[in-house]
Image 1 (cartoon, helix red, strand yellow):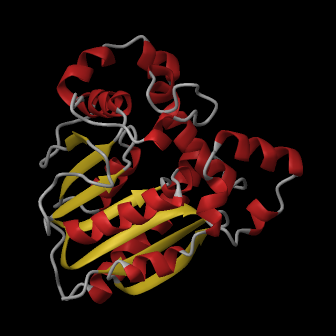
Image 2 (image 1 turned 90 degrees about the horizontal axis):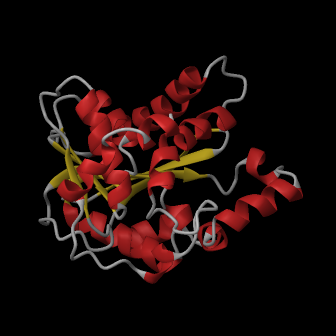
Length: 266
């Protein structure tokens, strides 16, 4: 998968997605996932989808294929979002969805498949990831609602207030310092319409699988995730409530991951 991307015409997409005025926060310039340039490299972008797929296989090792594992992990996550929205949104239609930290668009495509009538916007700080996302989407059959890709900081997107019905952030918070996470939550609250649903899926601090990792594997994981301790020490439910959200719920959606959902009050 990586070779296919690196030997493709993906490089031509950079000019159409990169916003030269973006200022990268200091934490984003740290090495991530054993890449010296963090997410700001073609190699990281080319390997991102393979790494994303492997998340599910580690969570559901008994699955016969990676596809089956992803259907379980992503399916559970999407079902929690759907159930929460229809329970608490007051019949707010799902017209616009924002996928913050969309990486190469895997989560964006999952959201679009689950909510086919919605317009999807994928936002990420890495223009390399967005270039891959755009390249991959061009290879797929055209959608009724084409995706919009935005190169911006999720802490301050510059997008209009109350312009989305769902804001989703998948597997991002464990890569952020607490201050950035709190800013991302506040920005999501600003972007959502009254009755809108906020959804976060990420590592579960209470996961037995994560707690039972061998010391070697845990040390390796921490060495590639510089803000992991800050993520595990943050009371995310409190941060979400402090931002103004209501109906805050946390659900273990697979043995390794938790999904938090919340509503913007009317």
